[in-house]
Image 1 (cartoon, rainbow, N blue to C red):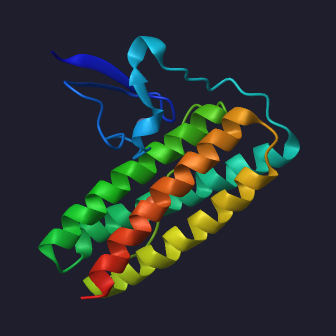
Image 2: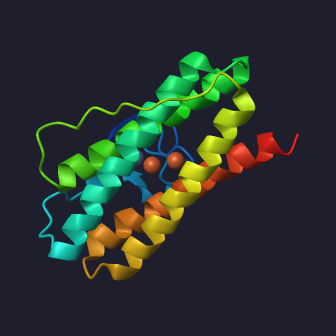
Length: 173
Ligand SMILES: [Fe+2]
Ligand SMILES: [Fe+2]
Ligand SMILES: [Zn+2]
């Protein structure tokens, strides 16, 4: 029997027999996916100055990474690479939306990034971007006194580590 699920990180709903292993929208791990009526999703958070600055930086990071991945999905010279970068672009765009909601903005700023035709160079760029995102999110999580903000930073650390593994696996070949 299909059920309605909801991700507690991005708040998006999903219909399926079972909860997905990763949120199809933001990539959050299974522990954050609950039956919709039981999911706790809150985007009305009182931000202190530090959390606000970190959320604003996170928004910029996600907008930039999402623009990079959509560029790479068009330009990269590898068929599987195109699919990978498209999937990553959509997930980073969802992350930007999470921060837009936390910051109570009406829209997400538009990104403008360059990318490469060489798939290997795109994978290397991806690896560097994900490493920076992970380091930043870890630091931001440790700096936050707000439970919800910390939950999002910690969940996104896990997701960006998954992304790092995808480029590492392909760069090893
Ligand atoms: Fe992200
Ligand atoms: Fe990522
Ligand atoms: Zn999600």
